[in-house]
Length: 141
Image 1 (tube, rainbow, N blue to C red):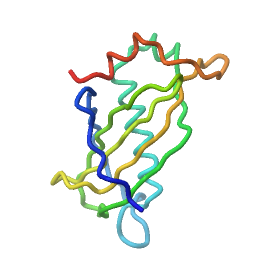
Image 2: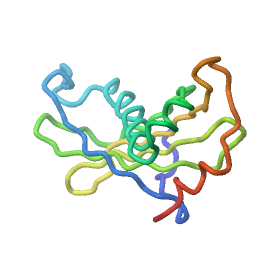
Image 3: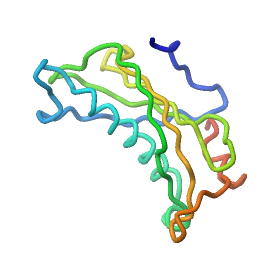
Image 4: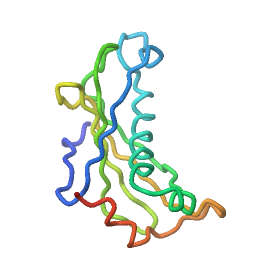
């Protein structure tokens, strides 16, 4: 059962990532394969992190995806234009829920997903509480 349409929180930045539909993304049914969407959820979160934090911060911290949940609503075809729009929820210790809407070139919702990400210290691979000084970066600009 599909959840209600995800809408960005008014206090959060919405980061946009253009998506490229490649021939290998198309399945036997002639549209983007569902597994590709999982990769796009991860790509959107990673791109947001890389765009907003400097190399020093990215070397100090890393994220691992713990869970992805996706609702498929409209097929994307081979010649489609698509964009992922992503934002984060409220931090829960070392975890953030990350929300992603995948829309076509006309702004129609094609898929939406929620991923659970955990902040880790890369050297030890141990979960680490999200530092409070990191939070303003995810706020609306």
